[in-house]
Image 1: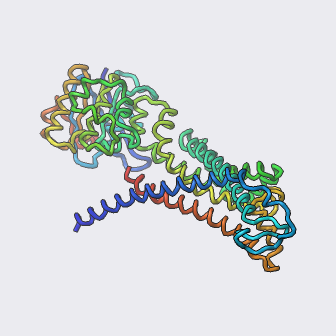
Image 2: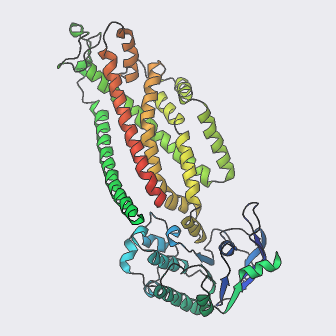
Image 3: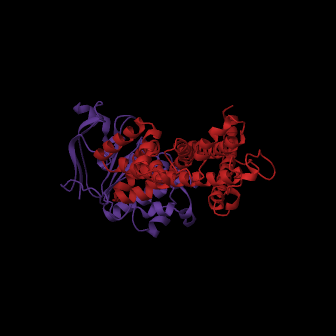
Length: 205
Length: 287
């Protein structure tokens, strides 16, 4: 299984092109960094990769075939703001279950405490919520994880904890990861290779 | 400066939470009040509304709080019976209307472009004609009476609420947690029932509360015009239209008290609805 973006171009409605002719391939177990200045279309590209938006040009394929609808999507996206990514009227346990059966080991390693499960989202901090979002996105059907500024709003210790778990998981399952971040040091430490989105996009247009 | 402002804001939210609770309590009381009037209709002394020509045209007194009419019937009992009938009609009509609005609003926003276009067109169609005209038409076609007026109210009062619900669903549908749910392979039904519906409950509740006084007023208006409930039923509209003839002879109490009662009931529920809506709006923006 490899995730492949072929000549992908995207724009909203009839707006200007955010990016065109992007070619990215992520191999299983590979950790790829994606950097670029603000507003250059990184988040939109992540959304296209994870199937949230349809590419206007080109195609996204997993192992050569395009993606199905209404089944568990093998590419999961973790957003920057966890507050928006959980239903404020659901308790955390229900939110977690949405991603599949609970994995006690995963919850423990992410530092999710048992008593958090029965709380409402507004009773947890942003960092705590983000752990839930990561745990939810790491269901057994996930082959690729796209971390769009996943740990930007967390403190260094929590960042380290979450990345440690995610990297372990990637190694164990052969899961490919795309890391989007402004922090050059973090990307350099984590990733096997780094793509400069702005450079890649600018070359074409 | 900024910090002080924040503290002030927080204090306000705490107060609001209290007011929210208070409004809920008032609502519960109003609902109990409403139920007791609807049920009390069967407990009131029927004898007091029997024709009794020896005490006709009596002004308000301790014995007859709202006075008596030209047939010696006690106006207080008649008013209560009329109110309970009107509220029954309003209640059933408003529930029907709110359900129609909920279903159509959800359908418009979740079932694709074609359904949305058709339902939006229907909403515009119903909104472009005054409620009262369609209500009279429907009630008249169904032969008037209790059934006709209830169905008429249910079929005419939904458009504005349906429009609100449609907009709300569209907003929730594009929320990140719904998109995530879709990518987890959840079905449309699961998302509609699990994610969207719980967010609509406050809107529907407020919508229903605001529809309710509206429905009562329209019922009274149509009955007043003689197109609604039949004249032997003690509806407020009937009482008011009958009293019109006696107003010039100085019997002010015939129209004054029933009208006042109607006004109080309508205003109470309208205030509760408005209050609830104001309480719910800012918090839902934070959610």
